[in-house]
Amino acid sequence: MVLRPVYGHEPLLNRLEGTLASGRFPQATLLVGPAGVGKQRLAVWVAQGLLCDRGPGGPCGECDSCRRVLALNHPDLHWFIPVVRPKAGDQDKQIDEVEALLAEAIAGRRSDPLYGPPEPMASHPLASIRLLQRRVNLRPFAGARKVVILGNAERLVVQEASQEAANALLKVLEEPPEDTCLILTAREARSLLPTIRSRLIPVRVGGVGDEAVRRFLQAELDPPPRGAALEQRVLLAQGSIGRALASGGEGDAAEKAADRLLAAVRGGPARWAAEALAQAPWAARGDFTAGLDALAVRLRDGAATEAREHPERLRRRVAALQAVERIRIEAQGNANPQLALAVLARELEELA
Image (cartoon, rainbow, N blue to C red; front, side, top):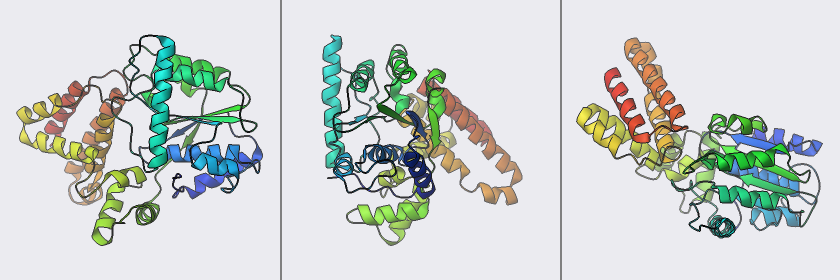
């Protein structure tokens, strides 16, 4: 199977195509935006354009290189996906283990292009970045350049005792080979080390809009949702195809987590304390932040109505949103998700 087409993002695609055609596409780029809006698919689209046999510009989609990129078997496309930490003790064996895990992950995306988010425990361990360094130093196999994609770059330091992986990547970014383009994706630029951010050209990726989500669901799902079920998924998606994929009849895990927390806050300290303790301590950059995003959406719902009818209630809602955003920022560091969730629940209870 091949990757699905890019849905939406027409203005951004036009800008990227112009940059590709000029031959001045940056060597190190950061695609940054909310989860599920298609950052990695856009990165592959850019890679397709860079490797296209017809020369600079957007991908033609018809040449051998374009077809091989879409089938994820182009030798000069290197896609790094978060994986579980290798168990081997020897450094070379760790790299071999990561290489096998990455091959398995790519094979999974090749067989099912509608892939979901990485596992909460997955990261870019030091062994992955050492493997990336090796591949960056290889000569291109089929053409004049190679493209390296590092998806979910905010997972660089997850489960690491130090920032070794991020620092190793920094060495690559400081002096990338002339025949190499690196494309990183992340939910937020500030989740990366400032020294890494300073070496990347940021490109903001927003949502695709309801119509693009609707077209995707109707064209790519079998059977496609119809009627009220279709419109409910479009509404829940908030412009994110990834969210639309995850939101079935009962909603995705992040939506459920947000609903559980709000219900626990209404139930009092004993209930929200139990909910906080049930939060997995290792998911600060994974499920936890996704749940906070869903909670922010919940709190924004109905804000326009309250602005007209209940100004005081609106003030409390805005304060609650600010509390969620503060906790989300802290979660990108070393904050314990269980403690952070307890602090947030207490603040929400006081604002209720």
